Length: 148
Image (cartoon, rainbow, N blue to C red; front, side, top):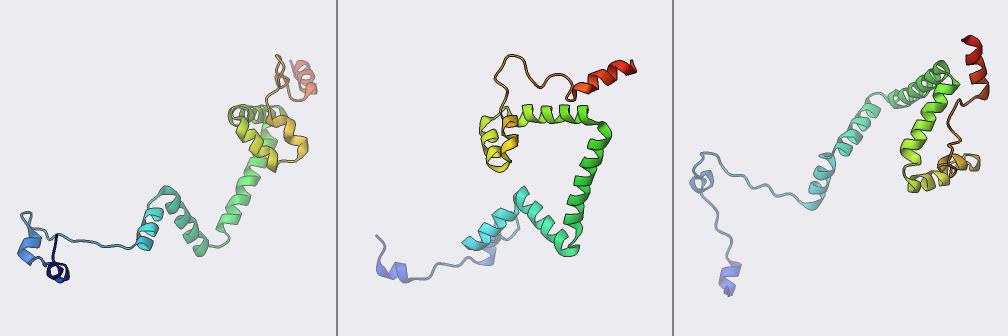
């Protein structure tokens, strides 16, 4: 065991020649406390970088994010109007199958958020024939037949 005199003695400091070592570069010891380490770890993640980017953009141009969101919403609405009801229904069905029907827990989570009239769409139909096959608008098949 170390004696009280050894414990009270300050640690031995390295000379410059000892710190430089064989490589010719001086070794640096960086000490960082817990708050600095926490901030550095959070900012080094992709999510932290994205948050810092959004914060910087918001400070630089405050209306940029709301205008960008509105532009995306209008672009989706315009594309939806241009591609038509049948294709839009098929895209919605594809998204339902891929993201919501594939994971019942996700459907249950969406059920808490969406209005009650949308709840039947969150769960895959139980019957053998899929009620979602075929044209979304029954008159669409008639119009197609007339055009041919």
